[in-house]
Image (tube, rainbow, N blue to C red; front, top):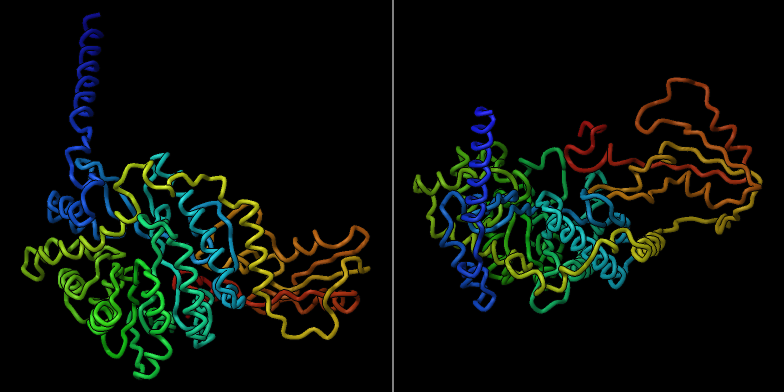
Length: 488
Protein backbone atom coordinates (compact mmCIF):
# COMPACT_ATOMS: atom_id res chain seq x y z
CA UNK A 1 0.00 0.00 0.00
CA UNK A 2 2.85 2.35 0.86
CA UNK A 3 4.37 1.73 -2.58
CA UNK A 4 1.12 2.73 -4.30
CA UNK A 5 0.79 5.82 -2.11
CA UNK A 6 4.27 6.96 -3.12
CA UNK A 7 3.49 6.34 -6.78
CA UNK A 8 0.25 8.32 -6.48
CA UNK A 9 2.12 11.20 -4.83
CA UNK A 10 4.66 11.29 -7.66
CA UNK A 11 1.95 11.27 -10.33
CA UNK A 12 0.04 14.02 -8.51
CA UNK A 13 3.17 16.14 -8.22
CA UNK A 14 3.90 15.78 -11.93
CA UNK A 15 0.31 16.67 -12.75
CA UNK A 16 0.38 19.80 -10.59
CA UNK A 17 3.75 20.80 -12.06
CA UNK A 18 2.31 20.49 -15.56
CA UNK A 19 -0.67 22.67 -14.61
CA UNK A 20 1.59 25.31 -13.07
CA UNK A 21 3.81 25.29 -16.18
CA UNK A 22 0.79 25.69 -18.42
CA UNK A 23 -0.41 28.62 -16.35
CA UNK A 24 3.02 30.21 -16.43
CA UNK A 25 3.33 29.84 -20.22
CA UNK A 26 -0.18 31.09 -20.98
CA UNK A 27 0.25 34.19 -23.12
CA UNK A 28 -1.24 37.49 -22.00
CA UNK A 29 -1.52 39.19 -25.39
CA UNK A 30 -2.43 42.51 -23.78
CA UNK A 31 1.19 42.78 -22.65
CA UNK A 32 2.55 42.28 -26.18
CA UNK A 33 2.31 45.36 -28.38
CA UNK A 34 2.43 43.43 -31.65
CA UNK A 35 -1.05 42.11 -30.84
CA UNK A 36 -2.38 45.64 -30.24
CA UNK A 37 -4.54 46.60 -33.23
CA UNK A 38 -4.63 50.24 -32.10
CA UNK A 39 -0.97 50.59 -33.06
CA UNK A 40 0.25 51.01 -36.63
CA UNK A 41 1.42 47.93 -38.50
CA UNK A 42 5.00 49.22 -38.51
CA UNK A 43 4.92 49.72 -34.73
CA UNK A 44 3.54 46.24 -34.19
CA UNK A 45 6.12 44.60 -36.42
CA UNK A 46 8.98 46.55 -34.84
CA UNK A 47 7.80 45.37 -31.43
CA UNK A 48 7.65 41.75 -32.57
CA UNK A 49 11.12 41.83 -34.12
CA UNK A 50 12.57 43.42 -30.98
CA UNK A 51 11.47 40.35 -29.00
CA UNK A 52 13.16 37.81 -31.28
CA UNK A 53 16.61 36.31 -31.02
CA UNK A 54 18.81 36.30 -34.11
CA UNK A 55 18.13 32.59 -34.56
CA UNK A 56 14.38 33.16 -34.36
CA UNK A 57 14.58 35.96 -36.91
CA UNK A 58 16.33 33.70 -39.39
CA UNK A 59 13.86 30.88 -38.81
CA UNK A 60 10.91 33.19 -39.49
CA UNK A 61 12.41 33.87 -42.93
CA UNK A 62 12.13 30.19 -43.90
CA UNK A 63 9.04 28.91 -45.68
CA UNK A 64 8.50 26.48 -42.79
CA UNK A 65 8.49 29.10 -40.04
CA UNK A 66 8.41 27.40 -36.62
CA UNK A 67 6.18 28.36 -33.72
CA UNK A 68 7.43 30.81 -31.09
CA UNK A 69 5.46 29.51 -28.14
CA UNK A 70 6.66 32.07 -25.61
CA UNK A 71 5.02 34.77 -27.77
CA UNK A 72 1.94 32.78 -28.70
CA UNK A 73 2.92 32.64 -32.37
CA UNK A 74 1.94 29.40 -34.13
CA UNK A 75 3.97 27.73 -36.84
CA UNK A 76 3.30 28.94 -40.37
CA UNK A 77 4.32 27.46 -43.72
CA UNK A 78 4.40 29.95 -46.57
CA UNK A 79 4.37 27.23 -49.24
CA UNK A 80 0.86 26.84 -50.65
CA UNK A 81 -0.44 26.21 -54.16
CA UNK A 82 -3.55 27.41 -56.02
CA UNK A 83 -2.65 27.35 -59.72
CA UNK A 84 -6.09 26.20 -60.87
CA UNK A 85 -7.76 25.39 -57.58
CA UNK A 86 -6.59 24.80 -54.04
CA UNK A 87 -3.71 22.39 -54.60
CA UNK A 88 -2.20 19.56 -52.61
CA UNK A 89 -4.45 20.21 -49.64
CA UNK A 90 -7.32 17.79 -49.93
CA UNK A 91 -10.84 18.10 -51.30
CA UNK A 92 -11.25 21.16 -53.51
CA UNK A 93 -12.74 22.22 -56.82
CA UNK A 94 -10.36 21.42 -59.68
CA UNK A 95 -10.63 24.13 -62.32
CA UNK A 96 -9.11 23.80 -65.81
CA UNK A 97 -5.33 24.04 -65.93
CA UNK A 98 -3.89 27.53 -66.48
CA UNK A 99 -3.22 26.92 -70.18
CA UNK A 100 -6.92 26.07 -70.53
CA UNK A 101 -7.92 29.23 -68.70
CA UNK A 102 -5.70 31.11 -71.13
CA UNK A 103 -7.74 29.70 -74.00
CA UNK A 104 -10.92 31.31 -72.63
CA UNK A 105 -9.61 34.84 -73.33
CA UNK A 106 -12.02 35.91 -70.59
CA UNK A 107 -10.54 37.88 -67.70
CA UNK A 108 -13.95 38.41 -66.06
CA UNK A 109 -14.39 34.64 -65.90
CA UNK A 110 -10.90 34.15 -64.49
CA UNK A 111 -11.68 36.70 -61.77
CA UNK A 112 -14.68 34.57 -60.78
CA UNK A 113 -12.50 31.45 -60.79
CA UNK A 114 -9.80 32.92 -58.57
CA UNK A 115 -12.43 34.37 -56.23
CA UNK A 116 -13.88 30.89 -55.83
CA UNK A 117 -10.39 29.49 -55.23
CA UNK A 118 -9.65 32.08 -52.54
CA UNK A 119 -12.99 31.27 -50.89
CA UNK A 120 -11.94 27.63 -50.65
CA UNK A 121 -8.44 28.61 -49.52
CA UNK A 122 -9.78 30.71 -46.65
CA UNK A 123 -12.25 27.99 -45.69
CA UNK A 124 -9.48 25.41 -45.69
CA UNK A 125 -7.24 27.62 -43.56
CA UNK A 126 -10.00 28.53 -41.10
CA UNK A 127 -10.89 24.88 -40.61
CA UNK A 128 -7.25 23.81 -40.23
CA UNK A 129 -6.57 26.44 -37.56
CA UNK A 130 -9.73 25.43 -35.72
CA UNK A 131 -8.31 21.91 -35.45
CA UNK A 132 -4.81 23.06 -34.51
CA UNK A 133 -3.21 22.30 -37.87
CA UNK A 134 -0.43 24.62 -39.04
CA UNK A 135 1.16 22.84 -41.97
CA UNK A 136 2.45 23.06 -45.51
CA UNK A 137 -0.29 23.59 -48.12
CA UNK A 138 -2.64 24.79 -45.38
CA UNK A 139 -1.80 28.49 -45.30
CA UNK A 140 -2.86 31.68 -47.06
CA UNK A 141 0.23 32.62 -49.10
CA UNK A 142 -0.08 31.15 -52.59
CA UNK A 143 2.78 30.93 -55.06
CA UNK A 144 0.65 31.56 -58.11
CA UNK A 145 -0.02 32.69 -60.85
CA UNK A 146 2.73 31.58 -63.21
CA UNK A 147 3.08 34.45 -65.67
CA UNK A 148 6.03 33.05 -67.58
CA UNK A 149 5.76 33.05 -71.36
CA UNK A 150 5.25 29.67 -73.07
CA UNK A 151 7.64 29.96 -76.01
CA UNK A 152 8.76 26.35 -76.53
CA UNK A 153 6.27 23.44 -76.49
CA UNK A 154 8.99 21.17 -75.12
CA UNK A 155 8.81 22.98 -71.79
CA UNK A 156 6.68 20.67 -69.66
CA UNK A 157 5.61 23.47 -67.33
CA UNK A 158 4.04 25.43 -70.16
CA UNK A 159 0.74 23.98 -68.94
CA UNK A 160 1.04 26.25 -65.88
CA UNK A 161 1.07 29.42 -67.98
CA UNK A 162 -1.61 31.34 -69.86
CA UNK A 163 0.24 30.88 -73.15
CA UNK A 164 2.71 32.70 -75.33
CA UNK A 165 1.19 36.18 -75.47
CA UNK A 166 2.46 38.81 -72.99
CA UNK A 167 -0.73 40.90 -73.16
CA UNK A 168 -3.09 37.97 -72.55
CA UNK A 169 -0.85 36.71 -69.76
CA UNK A 170 -0.90 40.17 -68.17
CA UNK A 171 -4.69 40.50 -68.29
CA UNK A 172 -5.47 37.02 -66.97
CA UNK A 173 -2.71 37.19 -64.37
CA UNK A 174 -4.07 40.50 -63.10
CA UNK A 175 -7.59 39.08 -62.81
CA UNK A 176 -6.29 36.00 -61.01
CA UNK A 177 -4.37 38.10 -58.48
CA UNK A 178 -7.37 40.33 -57.77
CA UNK A 179 -9.58 37.32 -57.10
CA UNK A 180 -7.04 35.70 -54.81
CA UNK A 181 -6.26 38.80 -52.77
CA UNK A 182 -9.82 40.10 -52.44
CA UNK A 183 -11.14 43.64 -52.19
CA UNK A 184 -11.18 44.30 -48.44
CA UNK A 185 -9.61 47.65 -47.52
CA UNK A 186 -7.90 46.28 -44.41
CA UNK A 187 -7.13 42.60 -44.99
CA UNK A 188 -5.74 40.42 -47.74
CA UNK A 189 -8.00 37.47 -48.45
CA UNK A 190 -4.94 35.48 -49.50
CA UNK A 191 -1.54 36.60 -50.80
CA UNK A 192 -0.73 35.90 -54.45
CA UNK A 193 2.72 35.59 -56.04
CA UNK A 194 3.89 36.35 -59.57
CA UNK A 195 6.41 33.74 -60.68
CA UNK A 196 9.05 32.93 -61.90
CA UNK A 197 10.92 36.22 -62.18
CA UNK A 198 12.29 36.38 -64.83
CA UNK A 199 12.89 34.87 -68.30
CA UNK A 200 12.02 31.40 -67.08
CA UNK A 201 10.62 29.08 -69.75
CA UNK A 202 12.79 25.98 -69.59
CA UNK A 203 14.68 23.83 -70.23
CA UNK A 204 13.39 22.17 -67.05
CA UNK A 205 16.26 19.74 -66.58
CA UNK A 206 18.83 22.56 -66.58
CA UNK A 207 16.89 25.11 -64.55
CA UNK A 208 19.34 25.09 -61.62
CA UNK A 209 22.26 26.16 -63.82
CA UNK A 210 20.79 27.51 -67.06
CA UNK A 211 21.55 31.06 -68.21
CA UNK A 212 18.87 32.82 -70.27
CA UNK A 213 20.64 35.16 -72.66
CA UNK A 214 17.96 37.66 -73.64
CA UNK A 215 18.07 40.92 -75.59
CA UNK A 216 16.79 44.14 -74.07
CA UNK A 217 13.97 44.25 -76.62
CA UNK A 218 12.82 40.72 -75.80
CA UNK A 219 13.21 41.30 -72.07
CA UNK A 220 10.98 44.37 -72.01
CA UNK A 221 8.49 43.38 -74.70
CA UNK A 222 8.07 39.68 -73.92
CA UNK A 223 9.19 38.61 -70.47
CA UNK A 224 8.63 41.57 -68.14
CA UNK A 225 5.22 43.07 -69.09
CA UNK A 226 3.14 40.55 -67.13
CA UNK A 227 5.23 41.06 -63.99
CA UNK A 228 4.88 44.84 -64.34
CA UNK A 229 1.10 44.49 -64.71
CA UNK A 230 0.85 42.34 -61.59
CA UNK A 231 3.01 44.75 -59.58
CA UNK A 232 0.62 47.53 -60.62
CA UNK A 233 -2.22 45.26 -59.42
CA UNK A 234 -0.53 45.13 -55.98
CA UNK A 235 0.51 41.50 -56.07
CA UNK A 236 1.89 40.73 -52.63
CA UNK A 237 4.78 38.46 -53.65
CA UNK A 238 7.33 37.97 -56.41
CA UNK A 239 9.11 34.63 -56.71
CA UNK A 240 12.57 34.79 -58.23
CA UNK A 241 13.51 31.98 -60.61
CA UNK A 242 16.17 29.28 -60.50
CA UNK A 243 17.92 30.24 -63.71
CA UNK A 244 20.33 33.04 -64.46
CA UNK A 245 19.31 35.92 -66.69
CA UNK A 246 22.08 37.49 -68.72
CA UNK A 247 24.75 35.89 -66.57
CA UNK A 248 23.39 36.57 -63.09
CA UNK A 249 21.20 34.17 -61.04
CA UNK A 250 17.71 35.64 -60.81
CA UNK A 251 17.63 35.43 -57.00
CA UNK A 252 20.95 37.28 -56.84
CA UNK A 253 20.19 39.61 -59.72
CA UNK A 254 20.47 43.16 -58.44
CA UNK A 255 19.14 44.61 -61.68
CA UNK A 256 15.99 42.47 -61.66
CA UNK A 257 15.29 42.64 -57.92
CA UNK A 258 16.25 46.22 -57.13
CA UNK A 259 16.77 48.37 -60.23
CA UNK A 260 13.64 47.15 -62.02
CA UNK A 261 11.29 45.53 -59.50
CA UNK A 262 11.64 47.85 -56.51
CA UNK A 263 13.11 51.10 -57.84
CA UNK A 264 11.55 51.40 -61.31
CA UNK A 265 8.21 49.65 -60.66
CA UNK A 266 7.80 50.48 -56.97
CA UNK A 267 7.06 46.94 -55.82
CA UNK A 268 6.20 47.01 -52.11
CA UNK A 269 5.68 43.34 -51.27
CA UNK A 270 8.17 40.62 -50.44
CA UNK A 271 10.38 38.46 -52.66
CA UNK A 272 10.58 34.70 -52.15
CA UNK A 273 13.18 32.42 -53.66
CA UNK A 274 12.02 29.48 -55.71
CA UNK A 275 12.47 26.37 -53.62
CA UNK A 276 16.15 25.64 -52.99
CA UNK A 277 17.18 28.31 -55.51
CA UNK A 278 19.54 29.79 -52.92
CA UNK A 279 21.27 26.43 -52.68
CA UNK A 280 22.01 26.85 -56.40
CA UNK A 281 24.25 29.79 -55.52
CA UNK A 282 26.67 27.16 -54.21
CA UNK A 283 26.05 24.04 -56.27
CA UNK A 284 24.38 25.15 -59.52
CA UNK A 285 25.57 28.61 -60.48
CA UNK A 286 28.72 28.39 -58.34
CA UNK A 287 28.83 32.06 -57.37
CA UNK A 288 29.63 31.53 -53.66
CA UNK A 289 31.42 28.81 -51.74
CA UNK A 290 29.27 28.28 -48.66
CA UNK A 291 25.62 28.30 -47.54
CA UNK A 292 26.47 31.14 -45.15
CA UNK A 293 27.68 33.22 -48.08
CA UNK A 294 24.59 32.25 -50.07
CA UNK A 295 22.31 33.38 -47.24
CA UNK A 296 24.17 36.66 -46.85
CA UNK A 297 24.09 37.39 -50.59
CA UNK A 298 20.35 36.70 -50.79
CA UNK A 299 19.62 39.06 -47.89
CA UNK A 300 21.86 41.73 -49.41
CA UNK A 301 20.04 41.53 -52.75
CA UNK A 302 16.61 41.58 -51.13
CA UNK A 303 15.19 38.06 -50.77
CA UNK A 304 12.91 38.24 -47.74
CA UNK A 305 11.73 34.63 -47.76
CA UNK A 306 13.72 31.47 -48.43
CA UNK A 307 11.86 28.45 -49.70
CA UNK A 308 14.36 25.84 -48.65
CA UNK A 309 16.86 25.72 -45.81
CA UNK A 310 19.66 28.15 -46.71
CA UNK A 311 18.50 30.71 -44.14
CA UNK A 312 19.25 28.14 -41.46
CA UNK A 313 22.79 29.45 -42.01
CA UNK A 314 21.79 33.12 -41.77
CA UNK A 315 22.53 33.56 -38.06
CA UNK A 316 26.02 32.15 -38.63
CA UNK A 317 26.44 34.53 -41.59
CA UNK A 318 25.65 37.46 -39.28
CA UNK A 319 28.05 36.18 -36.62
CA UNK A 320 30.76 35.84 -39.28
CA UNK A 321 30.25 39.43 -40.40
CA UNK A 322 28.93 38.53 -43.86
CA UNK A 323 25.71 40.49 -43.39
CA UNK A 324 24.37 42.79 -40.67
CA UNK A 325 21.56 41.96 -38.26
CA UNK A 326 20.05 45.36 -39.06
CA UNK A 327 19.58 44.29 -42.68
CA UNK A 328 18.07 40.98 -41.54
CA UNK A 329 15.61 42.99 -39.44
CA UNK A 330 14.70 45.10 -42.47
CA UNK A 331 14.02 42.03 -44.63
CA UNK A 332 12.04 40.34 -41.86
CA UNK A 333 9.97 43.49 -41.34
CA UNK A 334 8.95 43.49 -45.00
CA UNK A 335 8.10 39.79 -44.85
CA UNK A 336 6.02 40.06 -41.69
CA UNK A 337 3.92 42.77 -43.30
CA UNK A 338 2.24 40.03 -45.32
CA UNK A 339 1.23 38.04 -42.25
CA UNK A 340 -0.17 41.17 -40.65
CA UNK A 341 -2.09 42.08 -43.82
CA UNK A 342 -3.63 38.61 -43.71
CA UNK A 343 -4.79 39.33 -40.16
CA UNK A 344 -2.82 36.51 -38.57
CA UNK A 345 -2.03 38.61 -35.49
CA UNK A 346 -5.49 40.15 -35.11
CA UNK A 347 -8.55 38.96 -33.16
CA UNK A 348 -10.45 36.35 -35.15
CA UNK A 349 -13.70 38.31 -35.15
CA UNK A 350 -12.09 41.39 -36.74
CA UNK A 351 -11.43 39.70 -40.09
CA UNK A 352 -14.50 39.01 -42.27
CA UNK A 353 -12.64 36.30 -44.19
CA UNK A 354 -12.43 34.22 -41.02
CA UNK A 355 -16.16 33.55 -41.36
CA UNK A 356 -15.86 31.57 -44.62
CA UNK A 357 -16.79 27.96 -43.88
CA UNK A 358 -16.06 24.57 -45.40
CA UNK A 359 -19.42 24.47 -47.18
CA UNK A 360 -17.78 26.35 -50.07
CA UNK A 361 -15.26 23.54 -50.65
CA UNK A 362 -16.06 21.78 -53.95
CA UNK A 363 -19.55 23.28 -53.75
CA UNK A 364 -22.20 22.90 -56.45
CA UNK A 365 -21.68 26.55 -57.38
CA UNK A 366 -17.93 26.13 -57.77
CA UNK A 367 -18.26 22.90 -59.76
CA UNK A 368 -20.67 24.68 -62.11
CA UNK A 369 -18.10 27.45 -62.53
CA UNK A 370 -15.40 24.87 -63.28
CA UNK A 371 -17.66 23.31 -65.93
CA UNK A 372 -18.34 26.71 -67.49
CA UNK A 373 -14.61 27.47 -67.58
CA UNK A 374 -13.83 24.08 -69.11
CA UNK A 375 -16.41 24.60 -71.85
CA UNK A 376 -15.04 28.05 -72.67
CA UNK A 377 -11.48 26.70 -72.74
CA UNK A 378 -12.16 24.23 -75.56
CA UNK A 379 -10.74 25.22 -78.94
CA UNK A 380 -12.37 23.49 -81.92
CA UNK A 381 -9.85 23.22 -84.75
CA UNK A 382 -11.87 21.09 -87.18
CA UNK A 383 -15.42 19.75 -87.35
CA UNK A 384 -16.56 18.56 -90.81
CA UNK A 385 -20.12 18.15 -89.56
CA UNK A 386 -19.30 15.69 -86.77
CA UNK A 387 -20.39 17.95 -83.92
CA UNK A 388 -22.82 18.22 -82.23
CA UNK A 389 -22.79 14.45 -81.77
CA UNK A 390 -26.00 12.56 -81.02
CA UNK A 391 -26.12 10.57 -77.79
CA UNK A 392 -28.25 7.72 -79.14
CA UNK A 393 -26.14 6.22 -81.92
CA UNK A 394 -26.01 2.45 -82.21
CA UNK A 395 -22.35 2.00 -81.25
CA UNK A 396 -19.65 4.15 -79.69
CA UNK A 397 -16.04 3.10 -79.35
CA UNK A 398 -13.43 4.71 -77.09
CA UNK A 399 -9.71 4.04 -77.39
CA UNK A 400 -6.41 5.64 -76.50
CA UNK A 401 -4.03 5.54 -73.53
CA UNK A 402 -5.66 8.47 -71.75
CA UNK A 403 -9.33 7.50 -71.96
CA UNK A 404 -9.20 6.26 -68.37
CA UNK A 405 -6.30 8.41 -67.15
CA UNK A 406 -7.40 10.95 -64.57
CA UNK A 407 -3.82 12.27 -64.34
CA UNK A 408 -4.03 13.82 -67.80
CA UNK A 409 -7.17 15.74 -66.85
CA UNK A 410 -5.91 17.11 -63.54
CA UNK A 411 -2.79 18.97 -64.68
CA UNK A 412 -0.06 19.65 -62.14
CA UNK A 413 -0.48 21.49 -58.83
CA UNK A 414 -3.98 20.04 -58.54
CA UNK A 415 -6.44 19.30 -55.79
CA UNK A 416 -8.62 16.22 -55.49
CA UNK A 417 -12.30 15.55 -54.88
CA UNK A 418 -14.94 12.85 -55.13
CA UNK A 419 -16.24 14.05 -58.51
CA UNK A 420 -13.25 13.31 -60.75
CA UNK A 421 -14.50 11.89 -64.07
CA UNK A 422 -12.42 10.26 -66.82
CA UNK A 423 -13.28 10.66 -70.50
CA UNK A 424 -14.62 7.10 -70.60
CA UNK A 425 -16.81 7.68 -67.56
CA UNK A 426 -18.11 10.97 -68.91
CA UNK A 427 -19.14 9.52 -72.25
CA UNK A 428 -20.68 6.48 -70.57
CA UNK A 429 -22.88 8.79 -68.49
CA UNK A 430 -23.90 10.87 -71.51
CA UNK A 431 -25.11 8.25 -74.00
CA UNK A 432 -28.56 6.63 -74.03
CA UNK A 433 -29.12 3.16 -72.51
CA UNK A 434 -29.95 1.65 -75.92
CA UNK A 435 -26.54 2.62 -77.31
CA UNK A 436 -23.56 0.26 -77.19
CA UNK A 437 -20.24 1.44 -75.79
CA UNK A 438 -16.92 -0.40 -76.05
CA UNK A 439 -13.47 0.53 -74.84
CA UNK A 440 -9.96 -0.69 -75.61
CA UNK A 441 -6.78 1.10 -74.61
CA UNK A 442 -5.30 0.35 -78.03
CA UNK A 443 -1.79 1.57 -77.27
CA UNK A 444 0.33 2.31 -74.25
CA UNK A 445 1.11 5.88 -73.34
CA UNK A 446 4.86 6.01 -73.86
CA UNK A 447 5.87 2.48 -74.81
CA UNK A 448 5.34 0.49 -78.02
CA UNK A 449 2.89 -2.40 -77.93
CA UNK A 450 4.61 -5.75 -77.41
CA UNK A 451 1.75 -7.78 -78.90
CA UNK A 452 1.29 -7.32 -82.68
CA UNK A 453 -2.42 -8.13 -82.35
CA UNK A 454 -4.64 -5.09 -81.90
CA UNK A 455 -8.37 -5.32 -81.17
CA UNK A 456 -8.84 -1.56 -81.10
CA UNK A 457 -8.52 -0.87 -84.83
CA UNK A 458 -11.27 -3.28 -86.01
CA UNK A 459 -13.66 -1.93 -83.38
CA UNK A 460 -12.97 1.63 -84.45
CA UNK A 461 -13.83 0.76 -88.04
CA UNK A 462 -17.14 -0.83 -87.07
CA UNK A 463 -18.51 1.97 -84.86
CA UNK A 464 -20.78 4.92 -85.53
CA UNK A 465 -18.49 7.19 -83.52
CA UNK A 466 -14.96 6.61 -82.28
CA UNK A 467 -13.23 8.69 -79.61
CA UNK A 468 -9.42 8.51 -79.66
CA UNK A 469 -7.99 9.98 -76.45
CA UNK A 470 -4.31 10.74 -76.99
CA UNK A 471 -1.84 13.28 -75.61
CA UNK A 472 0.65 13.02 -72.79
CA UNK A 473 0.20 13.20 -69.04
CA UNK A 474 2.11 14.79 -66.20
CA UNK A 475 4.18 11.62 -66.02
CA UNK A 476 5.85 12.74 -69.25
CA UNK A 477 5.70 16.53 -69.02
CA UNK A 478 5.70 18.74 -65.98
CA UNK A 479 8.00 19.88 -63.23
CA UNK A 480 11.26 18.27 -62.22
CA UNK A 481 10.48 15.33 -59.93
CA UNK A 482 6.89 15.01 -61.14
CA UNK A 483 7.53 13.66 -64.64
CA UNK A 484 8.72 10.26 -63.49
CA UNK A 485 8.37 8.70 -66.96
CA UNK A 486 10.52 11.34 -68.66
CA UNK A 487 14.34 11.31 -68.68
CA UNK A 488 14.43 15.06 -69.42
